[in-house]
Image (cartoon, rainbow, N blue to C red; front, side, top):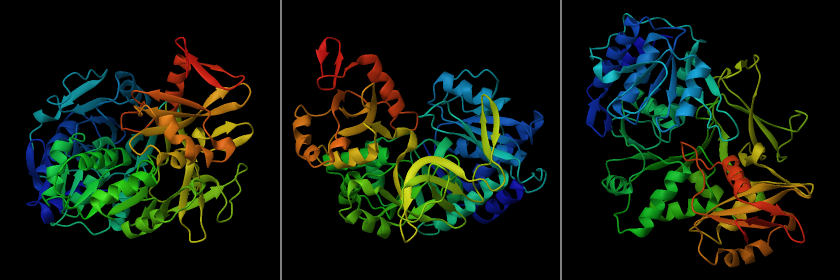
Length: 511
């Protein structure tokens, strides 16, 4: 792998085009890769290269892209870290990988105190990038360590090789709704350390433009979408919900988008239909993991509209599309046997661009040649080959001898409380194993009464028997709801009274 050749070709072909617009203005593709060359020169002067781990900690900006390119140019291994992580989580990532140095922008992360050397990239002098002078990197050496969200335990670092990173970029570009070009400009608001970086690299490689924003400021985003200058937007469900709600509550001009890309978490039918009312049928769904970058499965906007148009029962799962080129999906039973189409089980994946193993506090855990990745997700494949997600294995509730998927409970009740975020989980019980519990974020005063008709229509063992209202549901650094953290908080606040009817008692009052 020779990243110098890759970036020099991109610079020569598209260098004068605007590549990234951020809070500081617009930057051409040449300016981005030239900054990368300057940062890489500094890393090389420090003796860093293949075999070294270098953390990058940036808000969404041109500097984030330049720093990532710089690490690749030297042949070292990048450890991208979300700057909003706690000090404990930050130190965990550094200790797992043995990172020697942290690249950052002191102008945006002035309080960060890593326990290793720090290099402020603003002090690096850009210079014209050429293909010469960079190492030819062994394809199977680590290129990026991407940490999992940590919602089910300590975050693990998924090891992606240089060849895997390059292949993932090609595959991502191949499955985009339209091939990006000079006319395309995508809006990215989620952390660069996650999906935003992959889309940035894909768009720049095709000479297209990226608009990077730090977080979702609806007062800035909505006028931008209405201006017609943005053609695509990446919006996970949490972002899509915030923008949809803002559009419902304002008189903003209609967004002029071609496509909304969504993923990272299940898109509920309720949110889909609310978003379509504001944006139109332009939503594209994908399935991605830290262990296997997008694409895994793809559902085009017309296919998404068709999938969400029916009145499928809540236990059928959410359709996330068909496998991308090179991706193999198997649904297996508890003994590891591959199940037939239509049968539900554990989702396993394999592809050329998947991770090669994990790095953790306990060392390396590498995949064997040809080994499939156990996603921890439950699902099924229909007769056409389309994948449906049912739930996370760790989230499944076991109550009275039955297994219940939280997503199924949430979908069955969402229509009764369209303005309220709800989450289902199992609360530990000596008698039942777990009791299906529904937690609502800032619900209206009559929320339980409004749920009554929907509860009546549910299968009895799937009905929530405990109900809790909270001011705020716990989320991790990338906005995902954390059932594990919520379960911990509930256990700290309440005791369970098992008989005669299950009830949570806390602070002197019964819920």
